[in-house]
Length: 190
Picture (cartoon, rainbow, N blue to C red):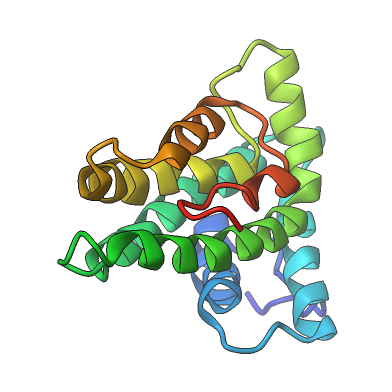
């Protein structure tokens, strides 16, 4: 069956295909790209996410769940690459961490905004129904950073010696960190 006229998605394509063909490349470009996305590309990503969420009523449908299930592996893979590229010299790790965190956290906020509909209608409704283990897209990104970069590499490099480490650790345990708080999660105060 041919795709419909909507350039964002076809109503017959599985979410996993839409993720692989359209969303993952666009989100990767946001995380890794040298230049920010132009308005048309940003709007197309937002529209694709919206379309995935609104294929069926209500918004807590299986389509939202399938889309949401792609987010954790996406961030896990990306943050694993950051950890793998960390310097071997423990003295260089804090500067590397701060530089990577600055880029990652700003871009994770952009991605979170693309998923506003999913966060509001799916994550919000799941929480209201008692699904407290489901997080916003931004908190998924933060959680994967903590598991893949902070805990295995930074804490080891600093061996608990940095004053800021306790502040960062406390922010990681908070369930709802704002974009403003993300900016404070550097080893060296900025």
